[in-house]
Length: 208
Image (cartoon, rainbow, N blue to C red):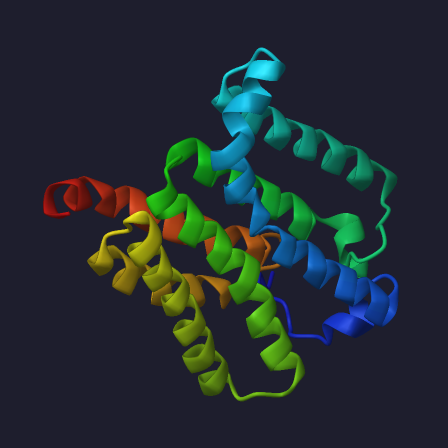
């Protein structure tokens, strides 16, 4: 069975057409707030509900999985989702899993910020370039430039090791590229760079 999917116009496949597509993009962009909320208010929320911060994050992941299981059981899609998501795990659920694992496995600013913001900005940026019929090479170059800028800002603001930023940025871009049938790029664009960061982190601790 072919495990890759063909590229389609995201507006045509979105529930709600252009309005649904815009909502989907807005949700993607709003993910930039997650690291801010986590680092600025996460401990307060955890204390309020009498849990550890890791338990709060894990609870959100479990809630997202349970809600997704119910949605798949009913075979429905909601406004902004793609029609094919009625029968497979949605991009939103994959994003929740990916971002949640980032916060569980590398819960510090130097990695959580650039990993999550690269997904929040990079994925919709690449999608819109494709929708405007930019050539693949142009998409790769422009997206790599944007994501590298994100990682360089992280190096400047939150202490991400510069050499990790230079390596991770193109990996984030490449990780968006596979078109797999059941794994959304919201997952690959976070989990592949996350795995790289976990491998590089022991060396970063020595070399920073």
